[in-house]
View 1: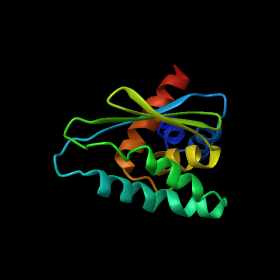
View 2: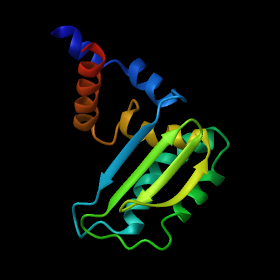
View 3: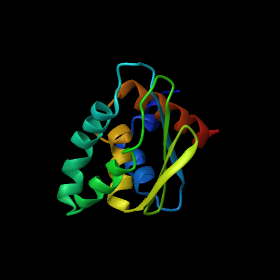
Amino acid sequence: MPWLSVLAGDQALFDELINADGVEKTLKIVITSKLVKRGNFLEALEDRLEPPLRQAGQVAALKDFTRQFDETHFHKGLEVTFTAKGATLATALDGKQVGTISNKHLAHALLGIYLGRDPASQPAKDSFGAGLAAMVLA
């Protein structure tokens, strides 16, 4: 099924999904190492979020975003869940909601880290794309 891989690799499909305000999107990150600390986790996210937020004139949203983690102790097994719908981005840690930010640029930038043109993990994006394409074409 060559059309499946073509659809799964279509960046326009990912862009449409990122920007689809009526579709709820959830991203779950599970910390799998004791070496990941709050500081380096947030630094990695800030490095990727800051350029698109700066371009949109929304850098202040980054401070609101990182503030949600102020009281968080990172540990192996910590589940960090981001849910975006429309302009709203909700953050949960180990199943407990810790914040909601209404900023579509932040929500889109966060999803872009994983589904954008330069994803943090190309294999993860490819796997997601294949699953999405199979679901759409089923």
